[in-house]
Image 1 (tube, each protein chain N blue to C red):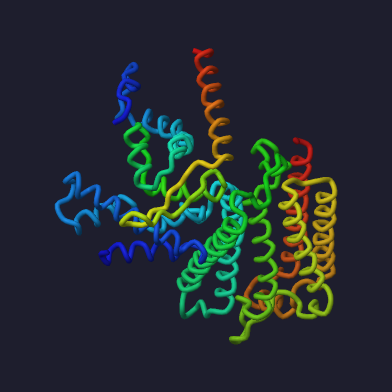
Image 2 (image 1 turned 180 degrees about the vertical axis):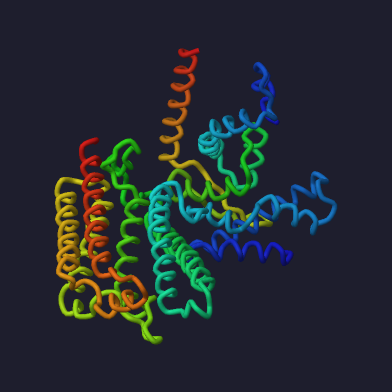
Length: 320
Length: 120
């Protein structure tokens, strides 16, 4: 028996259960021999070696042959779980990758000395972080689904119900993924900006960075502000999970909006929002009415953004 | 190619990939019927491959051999090693429950044929 047959048979039976191996080994050898002889008899091949090679080519990849014996799938992710795999990978990549990229960008801008390095490295590592995250998400999700595929062949994981249908684009109440991602990213950027202004404010007096917001606020109002931002981010994720805004989530959203607005307007009106040293630096720089202008701009800005938010929400809820 | 007359309908030819795909789908399950019918007289893997090939069932060797094992595992075939000849061979034979399944499959085959004849 030529060594090619030996190698072929052992490559095949290696994939089989222990108790099947000897039997399949014996039968497969006999079958190959039968096929070789048939080729020699019909003059399809002139010598034994050529015939043997042709027979093994006809039998094909031993992994495929063994899969025929075991019934093991010849695919990583089969039709039973593919739709769920695709939905999950798309969701995770579109949500997590941008968050990783933007988060990295903000942190790097915050940590790097932009004056000497420029912003290039920060954007570079942000792109890399987004890409790496996408690779990880795809890899691990695929691994889990491949294991599920083998653990329960032919069965879905979560099944599918019509409730999972994404809303048609015409419905404004539906929560789009990109919209939710944008909201969360905006909230994260805002929270990071609060930290950034404290340590790396663009305003410098004699080389020292002067915080924009009054550092005294850290003992009460700023933590509350950050908690409100976090609550808003959580709310957006809850709405995304439910796939649509309900009157409850909208109500909580309006309450959070108003709380943030009240906080900022109240602090601005009583001149407690901005660091006096920061305002003084602006005044020294030639902006005589900086204190009043900042107060008015802040109040108008907060009111405008809050009103706009509520108008958007009302439009969303009216047209269903 | 087998059963050439079947292809000479309209513009379709055996080389037409669309027709080839549909034919393959249609014939997929018939190998089991043919194997169960043929193995009422005991036979071994390669002999059955040749018999089926002559009868017009184009089945690949790497499909048929695992199929015989699966049918054996399902109890539709019984298997026995024959060591009397120069080369030991595993002989398969249709079991009583294999006969039952064969009868049911053939009845279904005839019912399908009748139903399609009624439609045409």
